[in-house]
Amino acid sequence: MYLDGVDVNLQQVRAGLAWWYRQYRREQSPEQRAAYEQTEADAREEQRGLWRDPSPVPPWQWRREKKAR
Image (tube, one colour):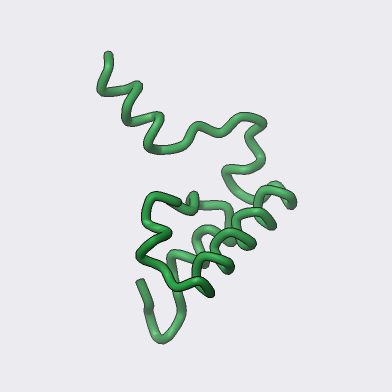
């Protein structure tokens, strides 16, 4: 999703506020995939946002567990 030419989804990943949802990687260009992969790796390494948690739970796993209850 772009706003004024800025990929806001990538910005969320950069800030550690979102995961790169790899299931949709086939819909991304090779450049986008590389950017998302590197951006998430950087956020993890720098422990930004959700990556401060030693064991963050991916949203798809959280939803699955919640549904199972």
